[in-house]
Amino acid sequence: MKNLKSSKIFLFLIVFVAISTLGLSLSGCYDDIGLPNFPDDIPETQPGQSATIKIAVEGDGYYNLRVDGIRYFANVPYGVYETEVSVGNHSFEAIDVSDNAAYGYDSDNKFIQKGTNNYIYLKPEIPPTTTGTVHIEVFQNIGGRTFDIKMDDITFFKDKPSGFYYQILNVPIGDHVFEAAQTDWDNNYDIKTVTITSGPNYIQLVPEVHFY
Image 1 (spheres, rainbow, N blue to C red):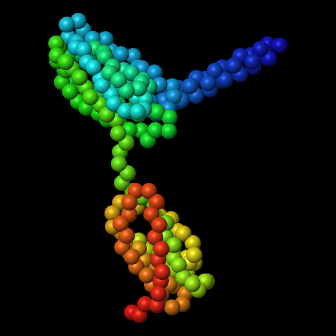
Image 2: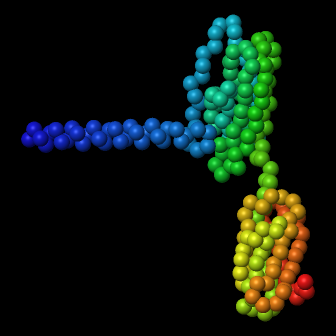
Image 3: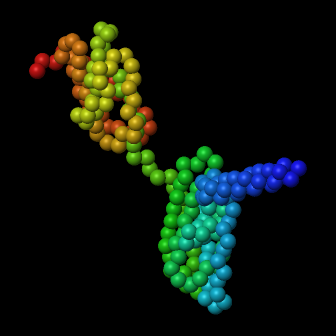
């Protein structure tokens, strides 16, 4: 009976430690993105050494508003939010935490003075897309031929059959050179310069007989 009781106590301690460790590890996962979103503990200001600030955030989402990295307001819509901070330099951030958001962001730094209108204007915007996705098709009437497919003189696909789309991800926006060279028979070849934009880009290469 004594051994059974000791075993139960030991098992309880193991479960307690495991749950505590899991809780600590998960608590670090919740920052600005995801739930829950609650304000942090706001630091106290000294009498006579503080000033009122008004953070004006503009946008269609819900935002976490941070002062010096501390979350003063959590999951709030557009509007004006008032609080007290110490006189001096401060950093301000607005982070989009809306469901399915692309996580817009804005920040500012400002010297806060006592007795003045300390307005901070933040307008979180989604960073512009700087890459696109390329879908390359090699078209040829005769089946069974294989091709090397290049972008900017780099071979991305080797000995690939015609009639299929081949995908290249995260291609920087701008002009790129695409090539298809037959590898198994004739010297069929095609080359194109294409301006890549954000989103999907479809390119068709039609190799023809090319005499070197």
